[in-house]
Length: 79
Image 1 (cartoon, one colour):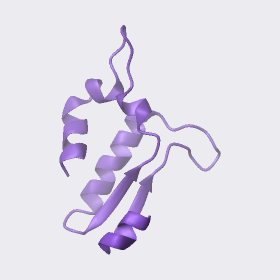
Image 2: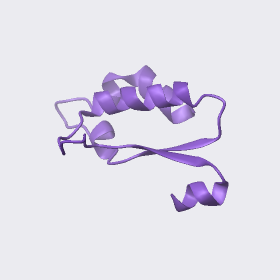
Image 3: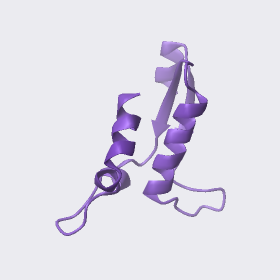
């Protein structure tokens, strides 16, 4: 939030837990981020993606959520 204050913009958190304390799946969080980008289009804002390693972390046998949603994560990173 300090960075957002220094930049003079609003900050929005893409959290990893819901109101019940349950973990939100990485793919759903990417969708929330995309929705936030759409809603904030044209506005100066900072999106904070909490606990992002579950999105980009994969394994030898399994692709990461980001790899499975390549077009989605590229649009998230570019904005």
